[in-house]
Structure formats: structure tokens, C-alpha cells
Length: 636
Image (cartoon, rainbow, N blue to C red; front, side, top):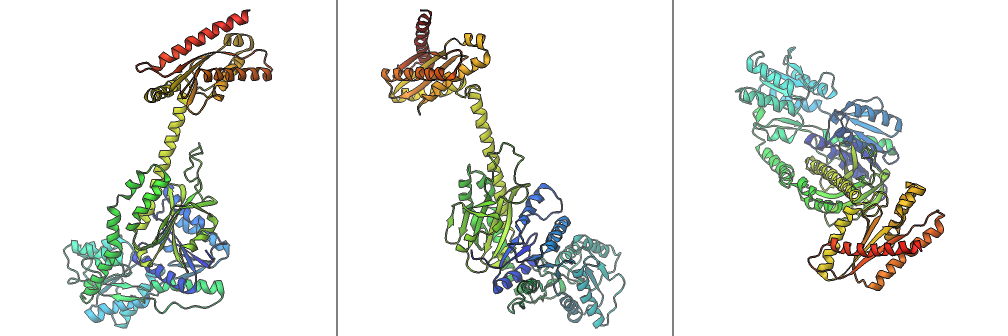
């Protein structure tokens, strides 16, 4: 992919309408100025510092100063203060331009939505359209810039209309439910008189206040009126629908890009004129019913973009299906069948660390926790035209592989989410959407999380199978020689006999007995005895063909079994080969003893009804005859 200037966006999520609008402004402005956008996201936004959070936060380790030209830090969106502090420490030393949204820092520019005027307009509406005089302002934490700027809009309106603000008409909240629920309780119990209206500094507090009052038996807007701020779909779709403010956050995102562009290039830029401006959305909670059509349209749009695909995902049984697969290729191909649950997905790339499963490493605690493997593999590349399962390699230092340009033309906005289980890093996913508004859905984050869980399930299952295989092999292998032991021979021999019977092929059984093992042990020690045992095993193993198995079935006893095109002439060649092996070994070993063995064999088509023990006994008798003969020869 031809290198374009790149802006990194750091956020916990963009899965709600407020954050989504900020990102619309960022992406639209970047496209117009020729920037790629890399947005680093987390599925979990916690402040726990636990293993899951470590795995999530690892995605930010991809960000490198030599790849990124500028950073937009949505610090107010991050729950972990430790993570925010880490970014501050890192970026303040990198020397690349950074713009923080909804948060103040000393080392970089900070931006907030221009919301004073809009909050003033909402207060004006209560006064001018509905004749409200006693109005309470429920804002955010005292000292917080968004809380204070919205409070300032309320004060301007009240002053402009000559209305008094009592000492308890301003309530500092937490941008969450607790303070609004407490206020509702005060109204319901009579501890605080019911006002004409409450203007809230965000939709969450407005919705919570409205719901609590309705539960307490009050009618909204008949008993008093409520408004929020954020322009969230949830507020518009609430019953009763909440009058709210659609803020200037689209333009705030665009302004952040313009500031970075100026710092990167020295050239000035202004937000696109086509970007949506902030406005009031008037609904039932203030007594206005004029926006019924807007509410219906919003509901239809929300259903088509979000709820319908939530339903597709929830009914897909995606995780269970992925866990059915027994290998990575099957899992990835199965994954391709669930792309339909993600609205507007244009391109998807599954990027795994090389040796992501760590199967070859016996120490299961030794895995990637921080950062990513130097070499990544794009195991799956989905586009609307087709899907590739090719495993193309690229450097993690590049973040987005150069070959992405083959799939995406022009400046693009990419979303990167980590693939992990707890703090065990597997890789990351890259998403690209045809319409940035579709990113409001949380489905693709859940979808991505399922991949991490399925990969861990596959990894553990593969590891257990590998361990079980090693345990099995150790149970059927002789620890001294490495050939099969009696148990292993019995298991393999029965299968070979069955095949010989079924296909009426010739069965070969060779029995071998090491000569004078006791003499070697008594005169030269057990280490030399073990050496002699191993030499015989090596002799048998070296003459074994593809369809043959050899084993040590006793202290100095061995067996070889096979099924195929055998003859008595071939048996003699096997015997000659084994004895020649001993001659070569004895000539070169320098030992004060010679290794030799007695041999016996059965060669013929097996009869039905006979067991492997019958043929072993036959070969054993032949071997004993050979042993007796060799003893006489040594005496003579």
C-alpha cells in the first residue's frame, strides 16, 4: 500500500452515537486531506488492571512514532487513568503532534465541543416555547469543562430572560445515573419542589431522571419537562422520547484533524462545510410533538443499522460454530460464513502472530503478553468480491500491511481490535466499513471477541491432543531403545494381522533374542548391557520397512512384524542384514565383547481363527532352535 500520511485515533470504543459522530468528523476530514486513519479500539473499557484488560490494552503497543504522523487521543473515553497516564508519558516524548478531545493536557492541544450556545438554545426553548420559569440545571462534575460550558449556556439564557437562579437550582452530577435518581427521589418525596423543567447536561442523566419520575407516578411532560444533551438514538427512541441536543462533535472531530494537519504540513485547513452542525432535537419530554417523523425515521434507521444486525448476530451461534472446528484452516473458513452479521463491512483482515498458538513451546507460561510478533500472517482477507485464505506475511511494525492497497483504494479508515485470551496475545483484526455510521454497532467488537475465544479453545484442544499423544507414545515406547514396548507391539501387531487376514497377504514375524546379556552385565556392567540392548534394537529398526513394526518385548527379547509380499528368500536377507549390522558394529565399537542375537521367523498367509500369539510362538520356537545351534558352535 502506497504510504500516505496516517493519523492514529485512540479510543475505548466508538459504539455509541456520541462517539460515532466524532469519528464521522475525523474520517470525513481525513479523507478530504488524504490521510489514512488507524483507530485502535478495545472491546472492554475497564479500570481493573486485570489480565483481560492487559490483553485489550496491548493493541496500543502497535502505535509507533515512525509510522504515525499525528494522534487524536479520546482520553475522556478511556476508563483507565493508568492507561491515560501511559499515553501522556509516551506521546510527550515522541515529538509528534497530538490533539486530545474532551480532556485537558499540558503537552498537547485540547478540544471540546462548542456546546455553550446549543445549551443556551435548549434553555431558551423551555422559556420561550413552554413558558417555563423555574428551571433546574443538572450538569456534570464541577470543574469539568463540558459540565461548566453547558452550565454557562443555562446561565446565559436565564439571565437573558431575567429569571432568577436559586442556590440549589444548579446541581453538579456525574454524567451518570446516580445523581439523577437521587434528584428524582427528592421530587417524589416532596423534599424538593417540582420545577417547571430540568435541563440535563447529557442524555444518560435525562433518561434516568425521566424513567425514575414515571415510575414514581409523574407524567412527563405534563408535570414537568426534561431535556438531555448528546443527541443519542437511545434518547430519541425512549418512551417518552427525550428532547436533546445533537452537539457539535462531528465538527469537533474534523477540527482535531485540521489542527494536526497544520502541525504536520504547515498548511491551514477548515472543517468541511458539508459536515452536520449541532442542533436541537425536540421531542415529547418537553411537550413538543413536532418531531414524530424524525423519531420514526431515527427508529427505522437505528433498526436497519443496529438492531437488525444485533439480532442476526445473537441468533447466529457464531462462537459455538467456530469451536466445532478442529484446526485453524477450518475455523477461518467457518468464520467467513458469519460476515453477514456485520453491517456494511467492506474489508476484513485476520492477522495472527507467527506461532500464535505456542504449541511447540512446552512451557505454557511463555507466551506473548506485550507487543506482537515481528512477523504477522494475514490468514484471512475478506472483501465484498471474494475471500482469500492465503497467510500473507508482513511486519507488525507496519501495522497495516503494504498489500492492503490491493484491496482498498484511496484514503481509508481502519479499525484495529486485539485478538487475545486474557493476557495471551494471538494477533489483531483490521476492519474497514463502507459507511462510517455503521461503526456505531457493537456487533463487530463482539464478533472479534468470539474469534479470540475460539482461538484459545482451539489452542488448548490442540495442546491437550499433543500432550495426550506424547503420553500415549511414552506408554507404548521402550524408554531405553525408543522402539515399541510389549504394549505397543501388541497394539500394532493386531492391526497388521487383521490386515493380512482380510487381504490374504503374507505375514512376517521375526523374533530376536540378544545373546549372552547376563555375561555382558556381569563382566562389563549394566551400562554396557544397556548398550548391547540398544544395538540390537537399532539393527531391527534400521531394516524396518514402511509396513513393519519392531519392538523390545522383554529384557533381551525383540520382535519385528510386517504384512506384504514376503518370501522365505526375503526372510534370509533380513537375517543376513541384521547379522551384518552386528559385524559392522563389533568391528568398529572397540568393545571387549561382541553383540550378537538369535533369530527365528514365521512367513506365510495367516489362517483365520489364529491369534498373533500363535505366530509369535512359532517364530519363537525357530529362534530357540537358532540359539541352541549357536551355543553349540561357540562351545566347539
